Image (cartoon, rainbow, N blue to C red; front, side, top):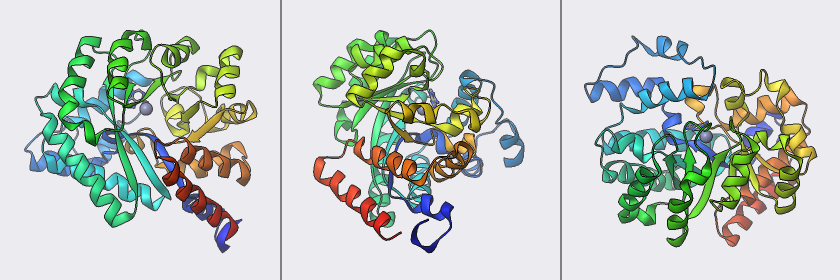
Amino acid sequence: MGNGTTPYDFLRGLPKAELHVHIEGTLEPELMFEIAERNELAIPHRNVAELRAAYEFANLQEFLDIYYEGAAVLQTERDFYDMTLDYLQRAAGDGVRRAEMFFDPQTHTERDIPFAVFMEGMHAATITGAREFGISSGLILCFLRHLPPESAMATFEASLPYRDMIIGVGLDSSEVGFPPTLFTDVYARAASEGLHRVAHAGEEGPPQYVWGALDALGAERIDHGVRSLEDPSLVARLAEEQVPLTVCPFSNVRLGGVARLEDHVLPRMLDAALNVSINSDDPAYFGGYVGDNYIDTQKALSLSDEAMVTIARNSIEATFLDKADKQVLLAELDDYIAAG
Ligand code: ADE
Ligand code: ZN
């Protein structure tokens, strides 16, 4: 094991990218209470311990109900800045060299928080994060799929003054009943603005939604995609095109997709030569950040160090960095392994 350290340190220090993290899902209960207090808002829980105890979810919807409630404390530029910077600091401590973070504008605009507030707050944190922690980051604007496609289009148009602060668009929230094909027009519009495209698919929804994300939306990465394994022809396509799948092991367990980490399909995905990375999704709600996801997943599934290095390499290759910046991070990864 590397660098004269414990195996766990090896995984934490491994240079990696995080490609599937919802910034609102990084809001730790401590910061949520602090922000609620300074904004003079009530949280329907008495303290941090009581709030954490409420984080038991039978499925995606049960989680989303609590997650949107938590995000409602965010009101000022400073709130968004603090939340984003906290995440970047933790991620940098887990070896993350590049983070491509989701945010949900409709969760905020529906509460009359203007784009200027959350965009400026998050963007300022990305600059501080690069300066203070050496972590590169970008923002991906996600459409809430439980809201109408017209709302997604209006949201996209409202984002255009902040076009330069965004690297791409994504699709999240309640999956089943809201197929990707509903959002074809807004994805075409985003593509015409030169934005990257990703989409959640195959988390709770069927393989058909993964096909839809690829073919109707032009998604360059699939977020989750674990249910793809149910469709052999889809697996063949994903392997052939090496479509990156941003897998979130803790999330899949906490939202009931798999009973235990030991039952996760990640080894089957690796065996099928799929391009998988490991990510945290909503770490403040699911019991750990990306480093913990690497560590516990390796242990639960008896994955080799080589497999973990492949996963880290996949994560860097699947970023939306340009070729030269990717090469820098890949060289860092090679150096880290050579020094091990
Ligand atoms: N929003 C935040 N986390 C999500 C997830 N795991 N799936 C869909 N939407 C989300
Ligand atoms: Zn997600």
